[in-house]
Length: 342
Image (cartoon, rainbow, N blue to C red; front, side):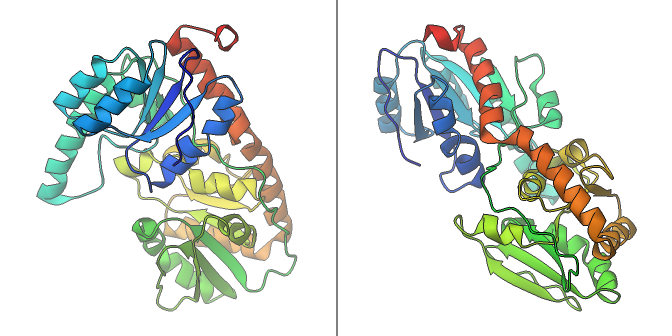
C-alpha cells in the first residue's frame, strides 16, 4: 500500500493495516482510500506501528483532530496504552471473527484466548468500531459502531448468460486456506457430476483436487479475477456453521452478484442476510440442498438469468461509493465534525 499526503491543516484519516498482503487490506483500506478522499478525508495508508522507530514516525505525522482507523490489529497491553495516549480519535475496523480464530484443539484454545484478549484491548482503546456485518457488530458491546460491509468493485465485466451451459461451470474464488469449504461439499458436486456435464472452476493461489469431479484451476491475479468470475455459470460460497464462518462478510457472493452471476451460499452468517432465497440467490443448508440448488440452476437458464439480474441489483448497494458514504458518516460522528467543516 502506498502512503498518501497528510496536510497538517486538515484532519487526516490514517488507515492502519495489520498485514500488507491481506485481501482485506486491499479491499477495505487501499481501494477505499480514494473514495474517502473524494468525500473530504485525506488518507494515509500505513502499517501498524509496532516498534519505537515506527511509533515516533507516526507521532510526528499526526495532528489533533486526526482519526486512525486501525484494521484488524490486536494490540498488546503496551501498544493499547500507546494508542490511548495519542491525540487522535481511534476507530477499530474488522471484517472477520478476529476474536475467535479457526484453530482447534489445545493450540486453538490458547490461540482463541489470546485473540479474544487482544480484541478486547482493541475495543477498549477505540472511540468507535466499524464491523463488517451484524454478527461482528454484536461483539462490540456498548462501543459506538456502524456496520460497514466490505465494498465490491462494480465496474467489472458482466456475465453473459448461456442458454446451453455445457459444461455447467460452478465457480469459486478465494485463497487456498479456504478451499476446505469447497471440499466439504464435494459429495454434492460429485453426485451432481454424474447427472450433469459439470466443471468446477477454482480461481485461487493453489489448485483444488476433487476426486471424481472435473476441476479447472485458474491462477488468481488481481487483474484477471473479475473476468474469470464473469465466466462462471454459478458462483458458490459454502461455509461451515461455526463462529469463524459467521464473521465472514459474504464478499465472494458480492463479487458474483456484481458480475451478474447467480449465487448459491451456505445459510450461515451474512450469507443468509445478503441472499433472499429464490429472489436474488439461493441458500443451501446441507449437502442435499447443495446438490438440489445447483441442479436446478444447471437445468434452468431462466432461473440463472433471473437470479443473476436480481443479484446484480443487490450488489449496487455494496459498491465503493455507497459504502464510503456510510463510513464517512460514522467517521464524521467519531471526529465530532461534519465533512463541511473540515
